[in-house]
Image 1 (cartoon, one colour):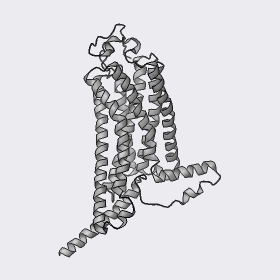
Image 2 (cartoon, rainbow, N blue to C red):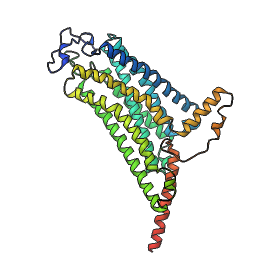
Image 3 (tube, helix red, strand yellow):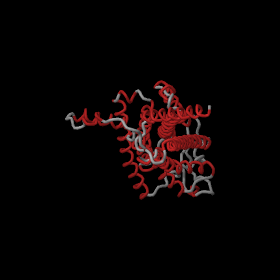
Image 4 (cartoon, one colour):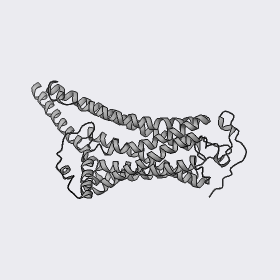
Length: 374
């Protein structure tokens, strides 16, 4: 293992407040006050266990339901839950160990824990991308959705995702580190991390988020076109007024999803981009520490946004609770009848079936128009 020398002299970076803090034992990175340590420790101690329990529960429900395990949509949701389980463990332990307990780990131990955090959060965003692309196919390829996205292809995509994230997260551990160590440090938020690696990872995550935003925008546009077309066929006084339009329901749901996603990830990624360009001040380092906990909050919210909004998963959850309690209180859950998807109930199979019907109606109307012209 490559040896690292930690200098005892003060780092000379006059453009930043960090120039007055020694990097001996990583002191230039441990800038939180006692009050801030209490606040950030409370956030991690609350959000960490909640995230772990929520996502572990989702994994158990999917693993125990044979019908869910066979469907690609729930494989992606399971991958998201698994990534968030890792995030709750790696992030909480490494963050508290570094900022609160201030353990003096060697570079290998620190980079190993940081690699676990990187793997977990990268896999989480990647799983969100796969879930979004799954919904995109539900809308744009409704008639051939089951042929395009088979269980085998879903498993292959998950294998590629996790292999890529493990490789990316292990790069600093196998040698892509700061060439100067801590004299001076390359990054002012991550010890031993190369700035080029930090810039590449930040750009990679931003690209994934941009693709997610574009996919949701296209889904909403397609839903809006369908609703406008059906309104023109049946008139505004028909079923369109009986219930809220599909595009409005989807806009509300996807708007909430994107707001939470952007609000949790953009602040921390912005600090990383700034750190690549210019040295961060002590206040900016403290702000980054608090913003990084938003990624853990996002992992805690993901089961509520993606898993529990799916009707089939809720039914499987009730069946699981019924089998656990064993007293028949949950038997009514087995008599649930299927219904059309709402903005709060996103089921790709139901959406696919509805869009197939819409496409078939559209084809019939076009054929009638052609016959009329002839």
